[in-house]
Image (cartoon, rainbow over the protein chains, first blue to last red):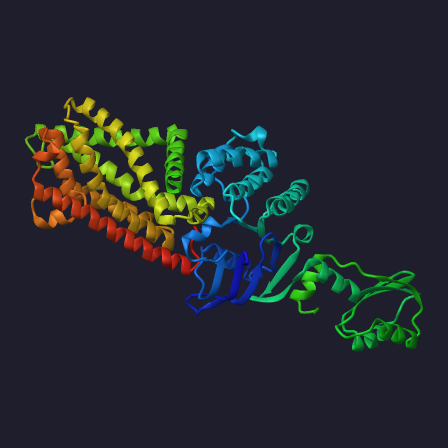
Length: 315
Length: 258
């Protein structure tokens, strides 16, 4: 059984000027133990999708289930916990320990079971010294860690993290990435993560689902996506420069070409379209009399891949 | 058993926050006591001139003021709490309780009732000391009456909380309802229509226990039955209104808004 099933999910928000389509037929599944990134620009439908999975928003149509339980039922919370909007998920007037005890209790965990989980999470997140400190007095990073710990204390099979590294410094962000990986590897949790921080997604997720304008535009493994774009992206160093006319002629065949000119040369960055051959490009460069100085494969990161996909430049 | 842990966690959090902010609690208590003092001094002055206020004795004023205070806390607690939770960003977390948000809010109400009892108990003590009139306090009779009387007010509170989920800013409603509750507490409970309203009948019955020293068994059975029905009907209507608004808020994605 899949941990999360989203099938033909549609969500329209009623407004005075007519319904606004937030999610338009989104379908994907997350298997147990997977870490999946849900990506998209602002307004792509990520948060609406996540909240539909949590049952916080009722879909217009479609099927959403977590471990077989329909999301509109409160019982879905037995299987899924979430961090939404970062640190705005904890009680600022309660201490670290009280927050964790409250959320464990809210889930129905007995005090004894909660105690074991609280001790483990406090140690895991390095919050021992702040155990009795009220959340209000914690740093932003600590609050964020506490928010994630409060979701994890519920001991659910599925965890949804919406922007978990928002506002964190580099060090804490890296620490959180390690913790997320640890969650899946050691505890076998299923994680669905939404973030604008591509570093986090690239480092933690095995698969990404990319949304654009409420639809799924890509659902693939991160390594496959990077490989796909790596084999199609080339960086060509040109000796002595290159005329704009030549570049324009090259663009007629290879539209995704960028020119970076320097004092003593230039670099062409070329993105091959599906079905195009690298040797075609070399032949064309020879015909144009372009003197090559070096050729290397461009190493795109997930951010570049993401941008190309949402701009419709790839796949 | 799991529900019990959830229930305990919610009530415990309520009590921790009540205890952790003594200045907030004390300033609220001081304000209500000062308002009572002003009413008391004014009433004594007017009564010395031969005018009867509230149609009753000073004991009636104490009981009426106590019930008004309790009702204010009861109807506004849930709505304020909802608005505060939405601002904090924790409302959605509460909605992710496996037993549903209605269970969370019922536990919340128990917390509110317990803190309300402490608060009103202290205020009542101060009022009795100020007026020099000691009232009867048979808890066995008073607690069920209080519970039934405020059940109707909690019904109003649920309806208000539902409105707060959808419309967010409903403070002006609170101000209006404060005055409506003054009228309900002061109304005579004899007419049938007054018995159908929340708060009026319960306040009269509580007054008979506290002022006349009657026990629960000595009160008219028909009145007690009406009080039970009154509490259940208003609570049921309030919960239905809350459920309707909650569904609208979930359909329109408004739970996290504030």
